[in-house]
Image (cartoon, rainbow, N blue to C red; front, side, top):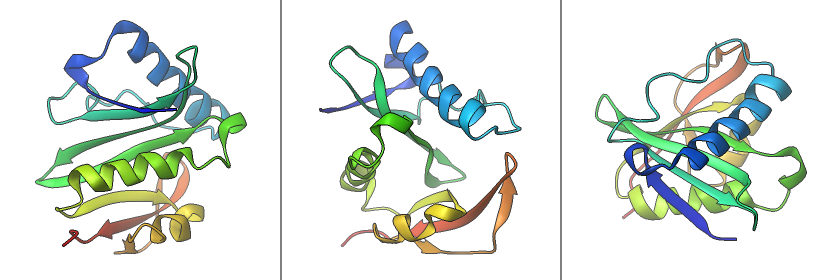
Length: 145
């Protein structure tokens, strides 16, 4: 499976549908997040969506990255339950690091994934906080040399 990367302006209607579908299944249904998913970021010029889809075009793993307050942020990391354990999110994260790792990368990790993000060089930079009803922790990855 290959990684697809598109800015918001480049997305087709089918891709938008697939992105919102995986985020709905993972965040709204499975994790019962209590905040809206559509937040005004997806179509911004500085937002890039990355995903891995199966042969029929169904997104199996997804994330987005964008710039906010001068910082490159990573968010909305989601993998379908049936596709977990295959390293797909790790592939996406490595791709982001390859593309933008020369700058500092920031994310708000779900707390149970703190060690997983740590394996990619992210370190905890503050106290835990609740976002969308879920325990999170701020993490940063220093620029690659």
